[in-house]
Length: 473
Image (cartoon, rainbow, N blue to C red; front, side, top):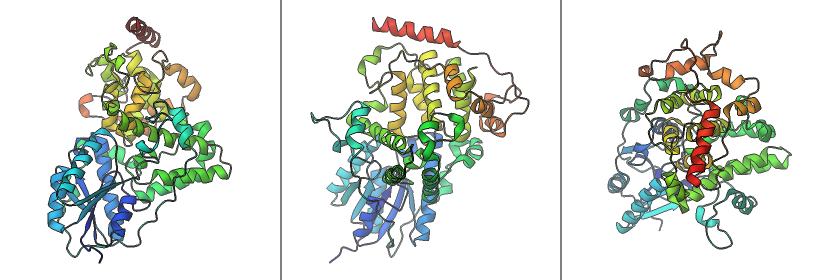
């Protein structure tokens, strides 16, 4: 006979009903399904915007579940204690979830799984957050890949299987357990007045994510390879926001790109490569967990970066007031929208770690507070790639020149003018919105004079190269 006891679907970065192996398995188990989101020790430690954005995603998922005759149970507390309490309340026989491999989530999940199994509870984790689980991609010698290009070559032709359909039914328990109220969690608390400015720039939920993918695949993917490096062109998919919260599956994006390639879309292959780059970050974080907190190349532990985040020039970088227009435009885009164009991310990271000689972890932490698409593995790998301390990294002596980058990728200054208000006779609405978003204690106004450079580009470059040569010798 079918076991009719409930299964708890523990929701984390898989806020969707379609192509969700953990949810499908919970439904296929034959009994009621109790969807649960836990504001646990890992989620509660997220930065202000990533935490808020995740809770907005949970609220959207709750609406989708209501439409299916189900509901989302909200609980706050340590993951294991909270799940044990729910098991006791519901009589659940199992807890199913989508697997995560970043170090913090992995430690939590391994502990939860071991303890629940010891309790006699079925504890199962499923794929779905990545295209390829990290242990399924190995070199000929049997180890993990450390360089992206051979990793890409070995996976780009692999089959990923067809996406799973949205369950037609969501069996409900006879009695629902109690739930917290989202408003009692005060999800916007860490955002202060910035929440109202950032909110219109967010695209939240599965329905919106699928619309975003459809719009990209039917149009912008054609010119993706040519325009993806142009910050003012709106040439990217923007799906990173939805992928990081699992509002759309990476498999769905991958197969859509393959179909676009078959019809001749020139940018489809470049888009697939970026999806695999995301997988590669998690591959590295799984096999070398120090990626997210330490120099991946251990010899860089002795490099003379400054770890002082209170230096005036570092504060100027955070606030978009370095006097380098492309850097400042990018940092303001981040603060207003919770997003920064990928080309701009490389430029601001290079400026911080090289021109300002600041430790890459300062930038990593700032992005972890301010990015709507923050992902622990991708964020760490991106910073270490630019800084020179990571796997498959750009060499340290590759120093992005922001002015040269502007001439190449923003020759008409469209991006810069969109985000820099000072000195403009007719500043754009979005450049002015920056001053509405920032904390009042920063005391910034649109009619302030635009600052002189905190570090001249030629002097900063020379200092970085001198430090590198001295360290190497």
